[in-house]
Amino acid sequence: MTDTDKEALSAFLDAQRAVVLAVVAGLDEDAVHTRLFPSQWNVIGIVEHLGHAERHWFQQVATGMAEPLPWAEEPDSADGPLTSNRPAEEVFAFYDRQISLSRRFVAGTGLDTRAVGRHNEHDPSDGYDLRY
Image 1 (cartoon, helix red, strand yellow):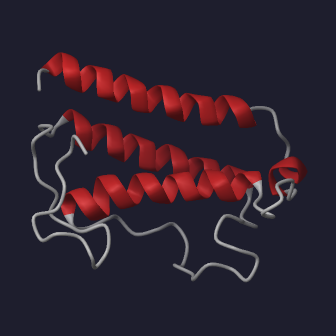
Image 2 (cartoon, helix red, strand yellow):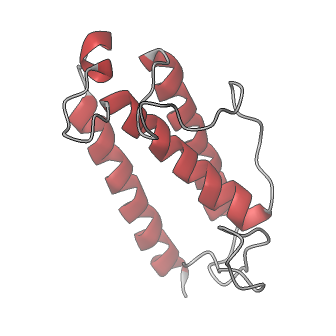
Image 3 (cartoon, one colour):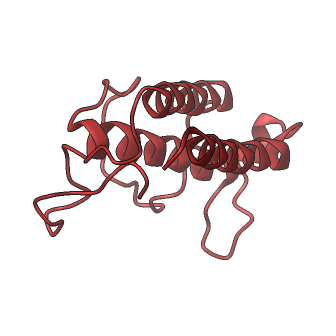
């Protein structure tokens, strides 16, 4: 792939990230913690999940390691995997940090670069490339 391909893929990721932030812009602390969905997810839980997804794919899978979380790692809460009681400011800072790390990784990595880590224990041993 060319640099233009990489720029297009980066722009697509950034557009998706911007949509998330635009949808939640202006919501106060109560609103982001209110469970509005039939699944009982809350908005801040979804944003935290997206931060974990950035961390998982661009750090754990791509490089085989990730920087420590800003809080103790916990199993999914009894309320479900896409809920969070953390302060919105803390979760948005986490999401922003993960996006920054992902962008830095993508900028310095060729699209054909093979992942070092695995998505799960069922992954093929040769992993994914950045394009995936």
